[in-house]
Image 1 (cartoon, rainbow, N blue to C red):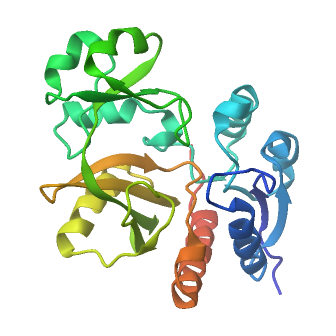
Image 2: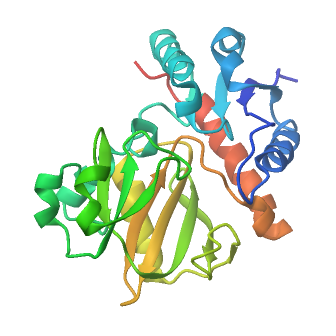
Image 3: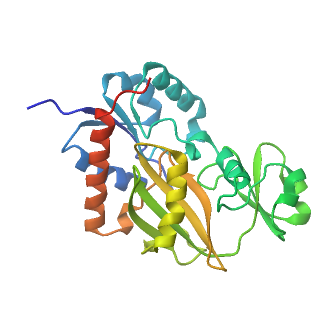
Length: 278
């Protein structure tokens, strides 16, 4: 019997997130992936030192990298220099590369919450009594503030993004493995964004989500497309999470969990079998 591929599974089991238990998700996934892979768990701060002994590194619920930016940058640099297979691949154009994509997608006319990064460009945004200001390097709502328009200038110092405050019906997330849709969840109550329920997307909803999966051009990996539905019924992109998206697997049934694990397992095998990046 051939040896199972060696996978280093990067997670911070002690990371505390509001309303979610990241560790439970990684315990579930890693226990199931062991059926196909020789798998070891490690903290993100240990990944650089350990990764050379493995065939691939899977980055999962490792927490916001801004908490350990220097170490994450060193991990990326070493992985790229040595051609280490990292899943998700380090070529993502979404959150993996920062929030610049929100500006790029706005400029390209995609259905995204309109975004600028200079007060001089506020005229490009729809009129709004309040604005959302957040760091370009932010994650997990860290540093996010809702600011009245007359106080905006005082709150936009540094490297930030500015968006109109959207009055929306609910938020909805679409979960993909490679380019295959897996399931969707939504938060019926905007004030309780992590109290999620299964959502049955329409064909139009999936077409919306797939536009961003196609734009990101990741051949392998797990992605989450977060959107809000406006009062008029339109969907607007909030975030394209392609680094370490939390999957809320505790909010789907056993059948959906099993299907996701099968999809992720098959994706990892394809990833390991694919030619190495130059």
